Image (cartoon, rainbow, N blue to C red):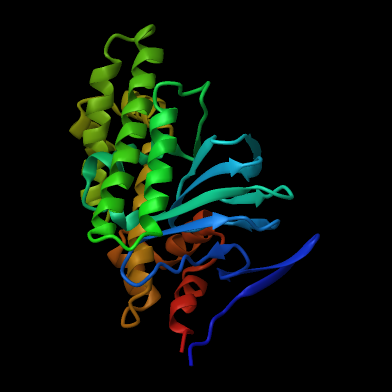
Length: 304
């Protein structure tokens, strides 16, 4: 018999049961090897503060919805779309009545697609897509969500392949829009901005491939062809995150993959993920994920 570790929290009007670690880490149970899960969520319930390693896409179909993400409140009207990045703390609040589509997409779906992996930090902590804010893509993305949902609950042949292709299409459209908007906003100040975006996407690809190695500012700035100070400033402007935090995030995600291996100790995971010491690994993992590596690992090793 499988033993599941769950956290029950009384949230006003109901008792909400979520599979979590240390009160805030939600475990997404995907159907077998399929790395996408979709809900037609109609429950009048709230989700307390939590995070997960999946991207979460939410679109109210009837009535409104509210999300608090990194302490900022987002009020969603019908057909508004919000994309929440992996590892982001958030809370969700449902109104009485109505329903919303909730998609959770495991980050590993994109693990071999360098272009997408390198721009995901532009989406941090979330992206809000409305008919007024992103008029050129909102209708197409909302239609994609509806089509993905219909396919998910169908019994058609090649269903999974169809869903994966539409998920990739969704993020390609969103990624192009985000980089194009950055170009338009920044070209006023700097005609080289499109070139900078290309350079720093290449830098992110380099970090993705070498994050377990001893990457230093001296080395990475030379790869990009900038001085250390110029590199640090431009990376933050272009990618919405410092180069060091991008590196740490890559190492944390690598560590999460290794922590589920029962044969590896916490020290071995730390070393294989690029951390110089166990103390540094423990400190940064807890800062980023709200729990220790040992607690994270126990989520998987305690299932009977």
